[in-house]
Image 1: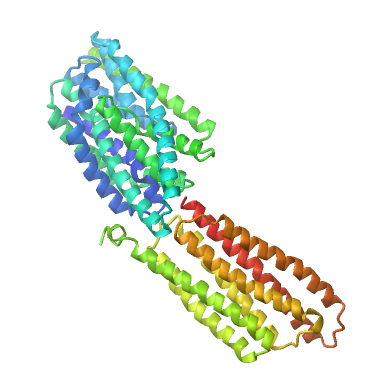
Image 2 (image 1 turned 135 degrees about the horizontal axis):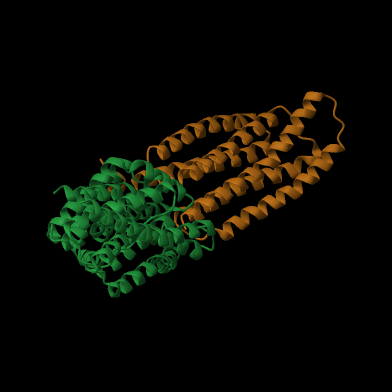
Length: 310
Length: 209
């Protein structure tokens, strides 16, 4: 069971990091209190992980056949890669990291199935695009409806406060459903855990990260997005959640950070303003390439060393 | 309760909006009183404006505490407070002008123009109330805002005429001259602050989309 420790650790850091994408804006702007936000995130992450989590597990495990030891090294290498890129302030995706790591392990064992990578890479490419399209469409549609419906300011306020809360819960649900496979998916393919049990353990570890160590990142990310008005923040959160939900149905784990970046760009375009700088886009692109490559190389090296020394 | 904000159906917000409305209504009353008191040279009515300002101060405090007790999204609170503070600035300016009006006699050359400015100020306040109501109902503000800008422009033009007439006057006492100058400055500045308040309303309207 000790081999699960790296997966649990990765789930914990994913929860601590990615919960900022869910309620960051709402907490930093004071719409939702931090305590309420993390409680709701934990509950809905667990719900999403258990109800929808198994859908993406087959994809993570299907890229190559893994032994239990390889599964341990894959999650550890991904966790190290994420930590390193976070330290360098480059946005990193656990979904890309774990797939890179599994491919690295597959190259060693000779079981890497590159044909399955095609669907995954296409989904990764479309993650920010989907975030962008959803936010552009929702911004224009809901914006038009709100303008023509002549809703009073008190009702608009209530609508936005409730919308931010509901879209946050939905975001947490889809984060659990989509990203739990990154945490414990490799243990399913290595035969250590059943999909249900993997979803439960993964969901719990993500929820633990949300509950114990998410404040700092949540405030940083939230304050970075504060220039968004409540309506734009609502559209951004909803678009991110919809993007994750769509890719969960396709069975591919994707990056919530990339989905939210796409959504912010979409809102900026619809509102006729620049919300993301070129520097930020370069950083996202760098993370996009570096995460799977680094995780793959690290897993390859760690497994080689294991073969040499054990 | 944890989700009281969501289940109260915006009652806190409605209460704050009602208070802001009564704050502006008080302003309309004060401006109208000033206009009639100036024409009738009624010092009793001028003193009543000082009482109205004190009453408005109390309403302002209730509005600010209502906002910071959780009404409205935090994003909107600073703009709402700024609007209320600006309305309060109008009261302050009106109070000072009323005080100066009590200590001077209006020279014949600027009398009629001063009455007209006071009357237009009172009309601008009414238009501010109409604009506020439109914002609360989520209606388009453009025409109302334009009307306020036209009033302000009219008063600005009159201000230069009054200043030209003032310069022709022979002033015997320094304190009389100062009070008269302060009175004219106050009377013609009220419209500027009303325009600022209107701009804040537009910002609130736009930020709620």
